[in-house]
Image (cartoon, one colour):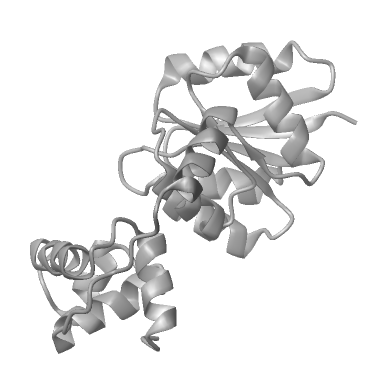
Length: 210
């Protein structure tokens, strides 16, 4: 039985190219497409694919946010993030959100096909370039967040970030403007010497902020 794939990417030309490539493989079948995260969620519910091939950078909901929602709604679904970003913090955030794989858009066709087959079979796939970057990070001296005193509002923002809220959702929850939330988030990063949501989650867990 063919692996059923849903493509979610805001670039129509790329979607068409991916569809042609994947449908040329006997064991792969593209069953649907979506141009944004909201439509991707609807299509996933309707089509019940085996694998979602998901762009990480899209207007509206990001691929990370869509991944988190898909993973919570469809635990058996395998999610392969497709991105131009060679960023290890994004990779960690993607895996934490529930992604099964992370592949770069510069990957050759055979790598993409291999990645889809791997995640469909239950494996975690990370593009080799990202694996090398992670290994290089592990060899670097560890950096500890600096001690800092957070304001009550900064702690509120951090608590909601850890729960997966977007900046807009935090603004609505705390009755703030999105710009103010972004400012608090930037202050958190600067004060704590952290650089990603994953780092913030780790800091919150270590310091009992839930």
